Image (cartoon, rainbow, N blue to C red):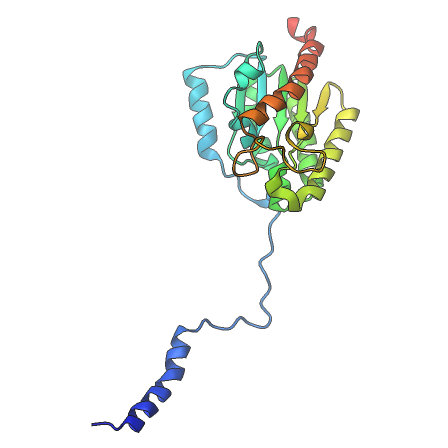
Amino acid sequence: MRTPSALLLACLLALPAFAADGAKPAPKADAKPAVRKPLAEQPLRMTKDIAAFEAQDKANPPPRHALLLSGASSLRMWKNVDEALKPYPVINRGFGGSYTTEVLGYMDRITLPYHPRVVVFHCGGNDVNAGDPAEAPLGRIREYVKRLRKDNPDTAVVFMATTRAPSRQAKWPELDKFNTGLAAYCKEESNVWFVDINPALNQSSGEGKEGHYLKDNLHPSELGYQEIAKVLKPAVDTAWKATEKAFKR
């Protein structure tokens, strides 16, 4: 039988081995943090979404020369957009939480086949939020318009500003830079319009208006979409009218 002193000694001797078993190995002194790849070097993620659109198009072919919504989830989640933008025939191809790399990467499948008369484009904020500088999505937007107009020279484009959503306050400076660059681009390109939807959703201080965002403080609520439609619809009307002669041939 062990004495109390012997038991205490045995326990003390066991402690280092126990601690060593449970401890995590110390990081190497020369270990470097992982380097984030720019979005342009990352793979496209939305294959299933795009395949679903293609199946939908095959089952029920959409009209040519319609009003195409192209971009990310704030378009995808706009459930009554057909009503909000009537009388125009609407094709909504907002998908996932997409980046401009993906809208550009999939445009051969869910943009160009429709030969749209007017495109409403809303994407770029996710790029900035993921770490790309504003210049990166702006460059991809230029490429999008260039590719769109190669076979559709008369198509008009209405760009919606990215939102200064409350949940992305840390990114507001870079989002503002993106919106400023997008507005400048729209002034230099023909048949292109810029619509700043932020006053429809946010107070002058920058904070979101009460009830205009969902609980995620990122996507517009039903009320938010109503307010967006008020500033977007006039620009769509102007773009549609501007293309009337070209699409009546």
